[in-house]
Length: 123
Image (cartoon, rainbow, N blue to C red; front, top):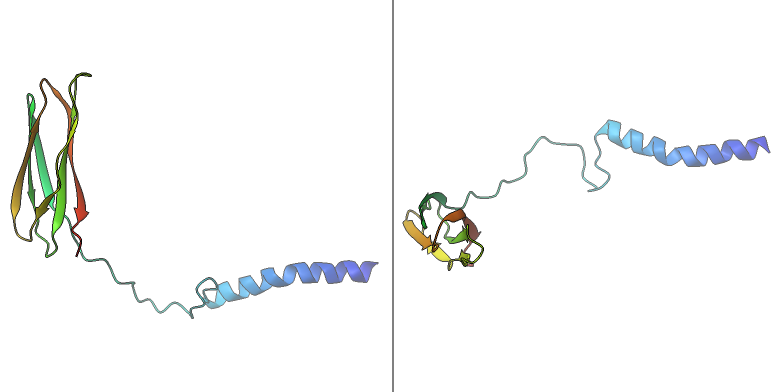
């Protein structure tokens, strides 16, 4: 009975030993790749507009400048403070490379929050 127990332990420990050996050799088991070469993966190209939003009373103004070579779609979102005042999501505006656009909206009374969302333009 004891030899069977030892064989069972060896069978259970074999996968753990193989994983430890692979890790110590720097082999990536999940991807099947070889040792780490130190090369970094390619970074995505920077994109998106830089936006500045200001609120004065019941009016919101945002200026968005796109310094990157890809077109960015920006959209102004305004949340009004009063429960009866309608919140608004503006239409998406394309900001061409090197251009600045002005987005504006208003509430009847006070503005609670305002922000600009971004997404890349379809090719």
